[in-house]
Length: 312
Ligand SMILES: Cc1cc2nc3c(=O)[nH]c(=O)nc-3n(C[C@H](O)[C@H](O)[C@H](O)COP(=O)(O)O)c2cc1C
Image 1 (cartoon, rainbow, N blue to C red):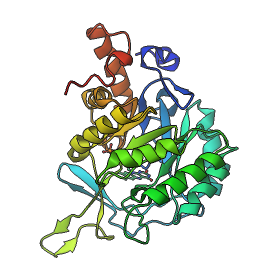
Image 2 (image 1 turned 90 degrees about the horizontal axis):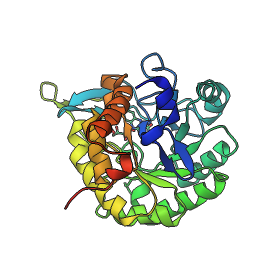
Image 3 (image 1 turned 120 degrees about the vertical axis):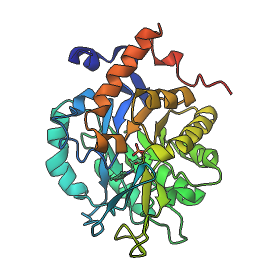
Image 4 (image 1 turned 90 degrees about the vertical axis):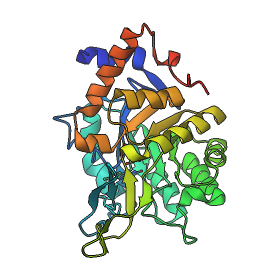
């Protein structure tokens, strides 16, 4: 697809919380750095949006290595939420990324629920286009042992406070995948003012070295991502998109345009690519082109003819 066609959006354009994205392909948090590291392979301005690495109030050093291991045709990571912190992101990273013309979502994470509200407040007057609340990280735990987003009361507190603090910027809530009732949690996010929900995050997992009888990651457990999690993600996207009136953003194991289209058929408004980007940093650009070709080949005007068309 010629660059100007990508920029115009055309039949691939989507809207999330009043924000117009030129196409539905987003870079997932944690796999595209702060947006410019992979620019020679994947220009950030060609994507629907770039979601930057999860930010905390203060810089975090992350876990000791090894932090990533291949497993079950996917990846297990325990990066430990290494990041430069909100202040450095705003001072050094956001300006150059926005200068490319990219639409930018900032992914945030807290050690405690109040941190999300403070982070959203800190981003309210920045150039960030939207905020994604990571309340589902397998490496972050509520004192009760659950991720923040698994506890209805904590989720409600975080979303309500963050939406108020965000000063009108759309707030996307990245929900935890391992819960009994994903729709109930998604509805809490919607009721408390979320502009969209995104799912799924990586799944709590463990990889073992039989020789040493140790975990392959220094942290022990980590988060499983990539193709093995796609079927679970598709089901949650289908359930949530049928129950909510806000957009659902799907992710988990997207490795080509067919995977992306399956999420849209399940009801996703847009999708994110994570592990696939680590395998091939040019992948999102190819997926955008291939979806446009597929629409043409099937005589479809735009993605609204595909979205949520799953027959069950
Ligand atoms: C190395 C790595 C780092 C990640 N860091 C974050 C993060 O900072 N915040 C977040 O919300 N998700 C993070 N994720 C999860 C991804 O954004 C995504 O939800 C998950 O990997 C599933 O998508 P995928 O199968 O396309 O990778 C990370 C994933 C990987 C592989």
